[in-house]
Image (cartoon, rainbow, N blue to C red; front, top):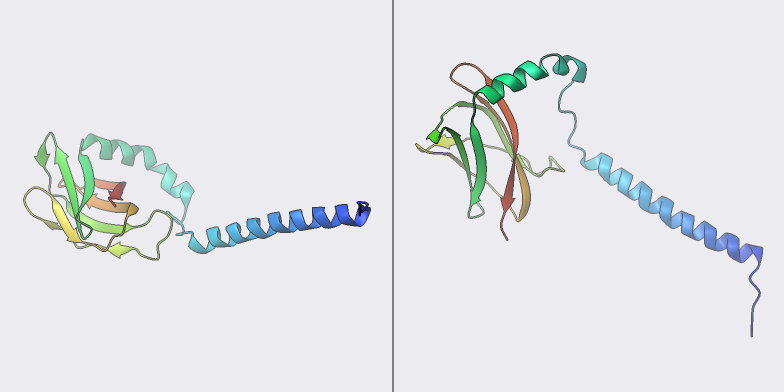
Length: 151
């Protein structure tokens, strides 16, 4: 038996297709807003006024900064200048996911003579270390360092 496709059938197919699209978009939008970590600065215009000078001062330090995980529970942060380990004052060190602040960990970094270390709880995947350190001359060093946890 062959059935005719009527206007109601076509309307139903379009309504169903657009309902799926709208539902998926709303779900993604709600999850994006719910997991958004928040503002980086309270007033971007004010922050932009000193951005170039701050960046130039930070780059003048000429630090090589890297972080990695030893096992899955020790973060190792290396700050060097011309191959010599540096020991700046760590003002803030936050270890967490790039997309959510739900599992952020504030770290107490300890200098062992060549690197800073701290215990962390990390699973596999990409993590960020958001670092604020102050050099001996008072220059603030701010950087987000990508840390990859091996499987």
